[in-house]
Length: 103
Image (cartoon, rainbow, N blue to C red; front, side, top):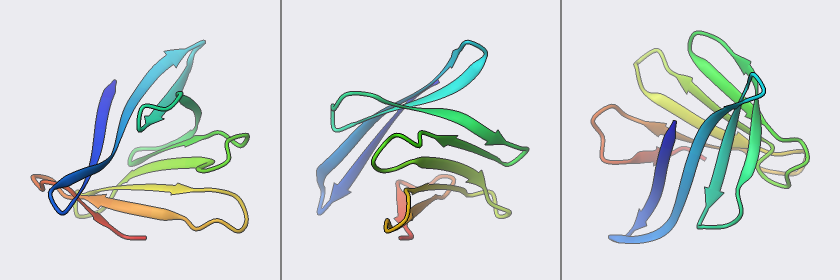
């Protein structure tokens, strides 16, 4: 699975990210490549009918990436790190042109 993310501020792109989910050795791996940097891998550690959680405890930030379908049908993406870091989340609305930042 392939994905691309971009952040616009004032009509100008300020960030972008290439995303992939691949199967490797029977496990799903989420590969994030923000702003063209080297890829970072996160392994699927938990999934259920409405969410998937990927983790890489050795990474500085984030250590965890989670996608969850909300009761209203929207998709919430969240990232978090270890102690002393601030978790962040975004809500993607179906048919919306972007996400609402919910830090």
